[in-house]
Length: 342
Image (cartoon, rainbow, N blue to C red; front, side):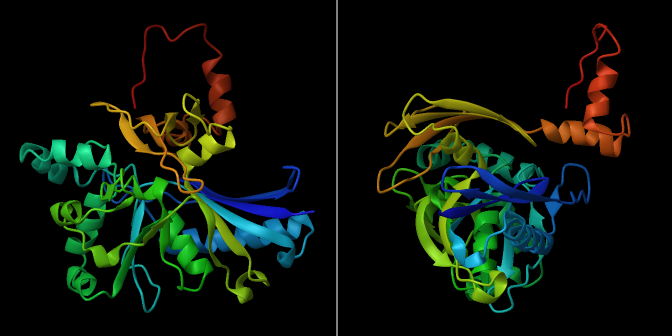
């Protein structure tokens, strides 16, 4: 019986799930992730906590499944997209916290680029509107705000990655620096038609190309885990951003398939096949690449879904749990005209 482990690094938690060859879930282990809010509009994660949690839940899920590490055929990684961390290639240490996809600190930079007339170029190359949501301005902010970071980047001492890249770097002992096309297409640095980093965009956003990981297909072996981490060298054979991976998980592999996810945020993603769509409002992005083909998707995003419920419970203390919040809402027949807007 073959076994696979899915490692899902999300915005509010990190979890590992072991499946057998029939798709039956044998074990699931989840660890919550602390949200760091240095000031209004800023959201950060501790990248070292993410790695520690990823390793811990992976080890525990294997134990709970009752299998040996060497019985795993492969590990696949799904991850929150756009969230980025910069680290030292020699020490493996992050130079600061990861900046989360929800973070808005670079809004003024994005506004300046729009005013400078760069929107058409960026949308044509990347399929995305200029927005703090995406990774490029986050990376430049880190390089500019941490002393000596830009100089170190220019010397090739630093690496950058979304959470898939960060986890795989650590799983392989710093020997593999990769990302897949779904994650790369969310950085605003990738030409989504060619699937390669765009030098003009990197220069526009102030991101040295020496920082960037190799872009690979979503399906395929990219390396193996360090033996001492899990007790065996397990192939890492899949990488996919969370929304695109959800589309795959719901069998949305052909043009016309669409799905909605309700997690930290709320997203609707529609597969458009090899035909690249055009939109002035929605994000045009790469769908999961399985093989050599190029597939696209059209996406709409609402940033606050489950995160809003979490905020009501944990920050405002309106209820003790999400379930209790539901019970509270059901105590009245209607909202009396009151609308809550995140």
